Length: 507
Image (cartoon, rainbow, N blue to C red; front, side, top):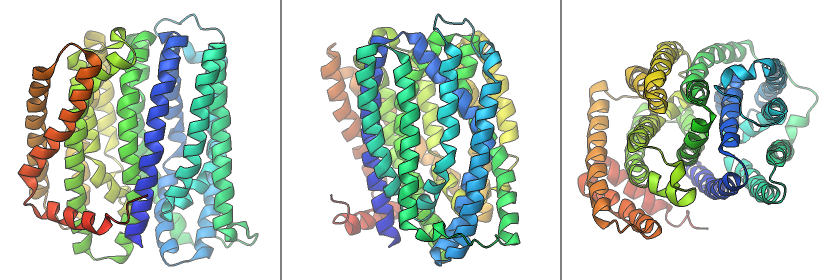
C-alpha cells in the first residue's frame, strides 16, 4: 500500500509540475512581449517580500503534519479531528497576521527598490500580492491532511486544473489588455478557488471532520507540536533568508531590471527544483509511515537508496542546466536577457547543493527531528546576509549568489547530515561524506566532459544546437553514471524496485 501511494503521488506530481512548467514558460513569453522588464522585477520582488512575511507561519504546517502520521496510520479519527481543529485556528490567525503585516509595509516599499520604476499604482499591485498570500491560509490547512495521509495526488488534481485555467486566462488577458492588473487579479481568484475546492474534497473524504463534538487535544501532543513549532520557526527563518531575500538584495543594491533578468533564470531553476521537491514531498508521508512501523535497518536501507537516486538525478539535472540554461533563455526570450557564464555556474552550483540536501531533509521531517536543528539557521543567516550584502556591492548579482553558496557550505552542508546520522539511521559520518564526495566528483567530471562535447557539436543554429544538446545531456551523463555505479548495492536495489513497479507506473 505504501509503495502504491508513493507511485500515485509521484506520478500526479510529475504530471502537475510538467503542466505548470510549460504554462509558466508560455505565460512568461507573453509577459515579456507585453510588459516591461520592470514588471518582471516587481513580480519577483513582491513574491520575495511575501515569502518573508510567510515566516509568521512559524513551521506550524510541518509540525502538524508530523503529528498526523501516527493517528492516520492507526485510524485514530478522534486525534485527527483534534489536531485539525487546532490547525484551522492556527492558520486563520496566520492569514490575518500576514494580511495585517503586509498592509503595514506599504509606506516602506520604496526602501526595497534602488530606483522606483514608472509603474502606476505600484502600492495597489503589492496589496494584491498580500491578499493572494494571506487568504491562501484560510483553507489550505486541509490540504496538509491529504499530504499526511499519502493522498497528495488528490490535491495535485485540483491544483493542475486551476493552473491550466489560470495560465490560459493570464495569457489571454495580457495579449488583449496589456495590463498587469488582470495578471495578478486572476492569480488571487485562482488561489481562492483552488483552496476552496481542495477543502470541499477533504470534507467529503473525511466526513468526521464535520463533527461538532471534538475532544481537546492531549497535553503531550500539544507540547510536542509547540516544541516542534519553536524549532521550525528558526529553521523556516533560515530558509526564507537564504532563498527569499535574494531578489530584495538585488533590487536594493543593483536594480529592478537585474531582478527581472535574474527572475527568468530563477523561474527555470525553481520550476525544475519544484517538480523534484514535490516528488520528494510525496515520499515524506510514506517515510513518516515507515518511521512509525519499520525497523532501523529498513530505514537506513531506504535512506541509502534515496541518497543514490538523489545523486543520480542531481547529476542529470545539474548537467542539463549547466550546459543548456543560457541556450534555453536565448531561444525563449532573446539574447538581451542572458546572464554571464560565471553567474549561471553559481546558480547551477546552488541548485546542486540545495537538491543534494533532500534525502536528509525528508528524514528530518519524517522522523520529527526539528528540535535538533533549531539553532542551525542562525549562523547560516548571518553568513549569507553578511557575504551577500557586501559582495553584491562589489560583484553585483554574482555577489548575492555567492552569499548563498558559502553559507550553505559552511553550515547545513555538514550539520544536517550530522543530525540524521546521530538520531535517525545507522550510518557513519565518514561513509556519508565518502559517498557524497564520490557522487559530486563524478558529477563535476561528467559535467565538464559533456560541456566539452556540446562545444564540439555547435553549429550556430540555436534551435538545432539546443535539440542536440538535450539528447547529449540526456544520454551521455546517464550512460556514464550507469557505467560507474551499476555494480553498487543501491543500483541493484533501485533496479529491483523498477522491475516491481513497471506495470504499476503506466497510465
